[in-house]
Image 1 (cartoon, protein in one colour):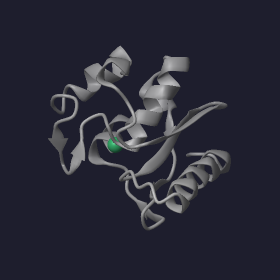
Image 2 (cartoon, protein in one colour):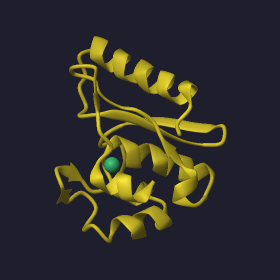
Image 3 (cartoon, rainbow, N blue to C red):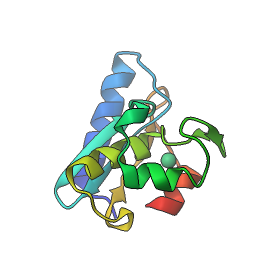
Image 4 (tube, rainbow, N blue to C red):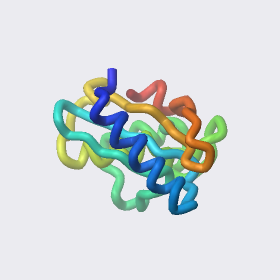
Amino acid sequence: MSSPILNKRIYHLAKTLHNKKRFPSYVSGAEYRTTRKVAKSGDIKKEDFVLSLERSLAKFGELGDKYAGSSIGFCAETVSANRVLQVHPTRFNNISIGKVIRPRTMQFGKKCKICNSLF
Ligand SMILES: [Zn+2]
């Protein structure tokens, strides 16, 4: 269960991007205890993935390839989870994913299929 603090930060990032008319597909966030990270989809380089996450993502295909409508590893949830894992190398099921928001419309989206199975 994600905390209200995390979801507030996600909303704030989405709103800021919305107001600046900068529209990544989605914004989301991840947390482990008090470590909270928010991110835009696509905001990661291939070399920045932590090994454990990269290995799990490899089950779905190559990083960046399409899987069930999302780009493997580059959705906002994975990017933020990766940032949490860089600080706390914990098990994925200890990580909570927050709301997913589309900055263009400020509507909520769904966690992608990969994130649903990982976190
Ligand atoms: Zn995802």
